[in-house]
Amino acid sequence: MYRSEETACSPSRWPTPGEAKTIPYRTIDATAEAIIREGIASADEVAEALQALSDFAADPGYLCGSPRNFQAWSRRPVA
Image (cartoon, rainbow, N blue to C red):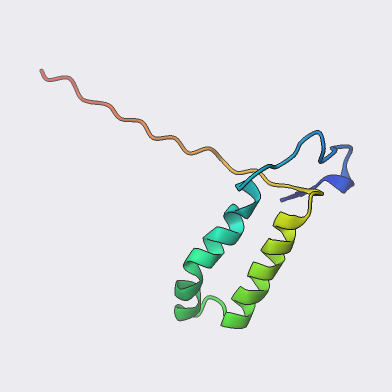
């Protein structure tokens, strides 16, 4: 996560549109039961994290980046 006010980067120049900023929220939301069940965090901690991630996604002053995922397929030549 990157706060644009800390540098010369302008959120209007480098926006994070659409669903990109909701990926961290959706990841925690989708795994919340397992996180709680395994004792990694309490239900209150998960709820607090989800609220913080929701606030992050709603703030236009933050940018979000994530790595691209690639998948490659190939076949070994028949000898």
